[in-house]
Length: 353
Image (cartoon, rainbow, N blue to C red):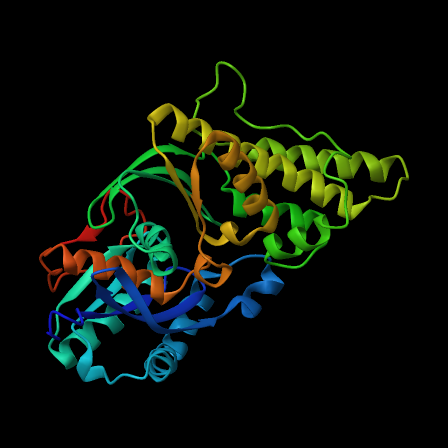
């Protein structure tokens, strides 16, 4: 181990979906410090299919792993002999993709004779914020929103106490973005292109439905399937009527419906639970309108809002190194030799023993 003044250095490896990430983080008295990270994406290889193809993603991880880890070390300006532990995404994610990352992490940990920690991808997204804004107040409320997940989480301890209080009952928000982009003939992934086009549209042009916002609906759960269907019906009706679909208006109105629900339920949950700090994490946290409306509503409710910079919102190895650094600092026992990927790993399992 490195000296107590400098703190342990953790290599984080992320391969849950279509991005191969490697990051190096040093835990300090002021929280985790990002030394350097690198990401290789296979997104372009999936674009023609309109979504991630697991077999292609797994092969891409195999090809990108060593170059990505090397790039992270180069950017950090350190030597592998300085690494004190290896953390890797153990789940949730695509089965084959997870196995590539776990196998690589085991190899690095064995080669360097350092402990291995399998950690939760979702906890990593929340931990990414600590790389920019320092230690997270306890408790905090996290809105985790990505292509595969939309959850509200109570975070009491990033090393092991995260509780889900709300989730999507169907499509995740990012998934809805991708599907709406596809029906509008836009490129994959849908989130960035819809966000960009929405800037030129009128968010009040079309009143799309807000899912699960009725008085009898679950207070903290989400649903975006009906919204996606409403957009499809609007486009189909316009085409039947011979009207030109105003794509920017559709994008802006769809996006407003998504972020309206996300921010309203998040603020309600924080207020109901008496939690003063809100974190927004995950790939969709890079969305400009979500960040703006969340800030507006959190400020009005007297809540502190923390959102990582866009480069730390999407999948990356730095976030895995960050949650790994918290786990190491907490003195948690390393994962065993039988560690493997778990596609359905619950968010309450921060560390896999």
